[in-house]
Image (cartoon, rainbow, N blue to C red):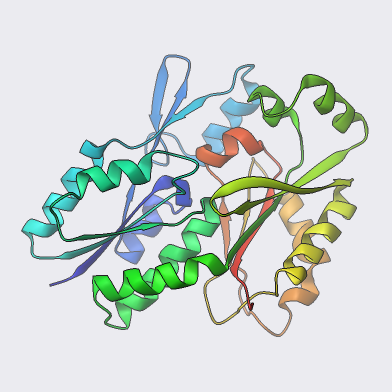
Length: 281
């Protein structure tokens, strides 16, 4: 009996990583007009951001249906395997509810990450560690539920343009922000996106991001953590890494970096920098 870990592409775990880690990543759909793509399968992150930048209209994303969960769940159960399924936040998508419907009557452990992108990703990575330690699906689920409130996901956006396109802020606010080089700092708290502050310029944005990491209790380097960026270049991420070197020096040999995909990239736009970690608090 094996343990199958299933998640969705909002975790920004690539299909290649999924094969290496021995997990399954179910792709959400990204829709540009009448064209529909499977996130990370029929459209990669590079192509997505090229299209996003060129498009006057925001693409839409579509949640996974119960049917899309049911197949993998049934296949695992029929093979005699246990299942741990970790979804993006139920407050941002209906994926968790779809998984609940699909899992009815099946021995499947469901975990609502209450996070997304690298926040969801590090919870999956913790599940992998627990699987490799020999824990059962129920035991893994219990530990994840206990640990997920300690996840901190904080991001610095480079532009307000995509929040404007998505109707999250007014055009006037977006224009003023652009003229003043305002960089919003956001977080996912209790499963929802919140704005923590606004910085003027990238340097001040990086300083605010570092300050918020420290105020959150600092990074627990004994558990998974990850940095991430959105767009066609990681230039802004590299600048953040340089500015925040004191947070990692002597504590982490390698800084894991993921690339934000279509689910969050649609609203964050290119140039976002994010950090996810388990807090020491």
